[in-house]
Length: 131
Image 1 (cartoon, rainbow, N blue to C red):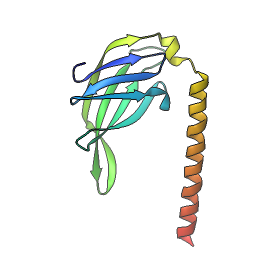
Image 2 (cartoon, helix red, strand yellow):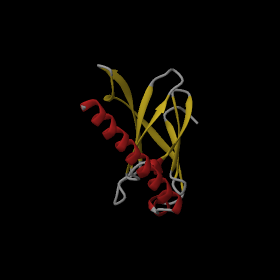
Image 3 (cartoon, rainbow, N blue to C red):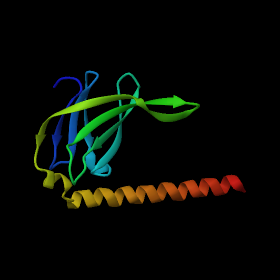
């Protein structure tokens, strides 16, 4: 696979791509299927946010990477430093991609549990720091 190219596996909700001579795979079911955001870490220590976008009603799937920089001690996405990854092959159907499976529902439940746990811990930490 050449740099800045990808293969979309619709049924598996997975995109595999090559960027800066490294191979990556991103589980698109970890986010919103129409607008999935994830992150990758390169061997050189740089982070990039991935944005897979596919409007269910129309359009074609696309993948862009955005450099993540540290600014004033915070990580920020630099939308001016972007890379288009060309999807060169697609396997499966659009219907398979947008069909929710039991595994998708399990992942969503686990994600929501982890998010609620994080929010509880955050509220506890804020409360402890206010007293």
